[in-house]
Image (tube, rainbow, N blue to C red; front, side, top):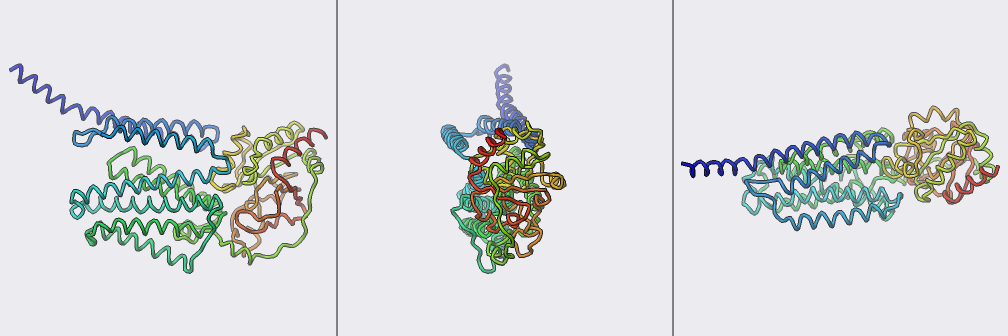
Length: 487
């Protein structure tokens, strides 16, 4: 009798153990999901963004290690721990080295590259799961919804990967904009073909397992065609959209594995990326529909149709610029990509401090798409310890330009170009801009008269109230600070 009781207890313990592990894993997944929500919420403010990022990273680490050690499927734990940890170590080392070496000017490229890797991982999950079905002989017997999720994960992940790689090349100025004849028709037609094939294969209308590779190839081609024609000034919107694609693709993987934290994280990334895309579209006065069908952004060819510039360029010396700013009541600095290229954010902050010592009010005007990715300028200035309350968004700073004595534009171009309001032939026409022309004086710091990222001339340069200060931003700002101290 005792032996029977002991056997029963052992059997009950064996039966309960997996449930206990699963419960613990679910608790860890819940912790990870909550950390994602809290971390994203903290990313909404510059002063808490770094801490929010760390909190979300901790939640992700807990979910990953919980899965490795606690996940079981039909009583079997995960194996291949050596390969899993080897991959984690190699990925961590590579990611850390890339993050430490990347310059602020290369941050958009790195974001695109990492986002592309996320899309590739989501696509690989779909490939692996489909391979499991095919080898088990269950392809034709699988649930249609299960197959549809596999195909959607493959499609979205592949588009995100291919599009992100093209975005990486364009941001690095190694790939030029190219537009096919009937680009919209080709893009819409190809996307419809991909979706129809995926739907047909999911519901047994196509039974050849090789259809997976057809969908993969067409999706990669669409990803390239989707991003290739997009103009440079519109790249911030594309980056946020591709980021949302990767999140949705990750959510498909969460569905496949019934992994709640993966599903939750994918939904959060997808929804956050979509909301950011909508905000970027509003900032650019573009249509989200046009983004999705590949008709987004103005062609640089349109720049040739833009009206010719009237007026003359007026330069200003370092000493005159210093005097003008020293005796101003209010100065607004407009940072742009040129500031990042010159790595002049620290000396720009020093200029701000010197002016404030003279009793001048100083603020920074931040356009939503300044730089080459969302938030580029905020990160750049935060690196140099600029106070967060001095970073003023476009809608809030625009009314203040009428009471501003001097606007100092450091490396920005398209976001201050009045052609967005005055020239219907301009590719940036309709894009909300910083109303710097309302200020009493504007000083534009540039290396040369070369056009900005949108490839068009800037009307502001020819304004009677504007003066050009040519030279490297860091060198020129250093000389300006020195001159202010000596006045």
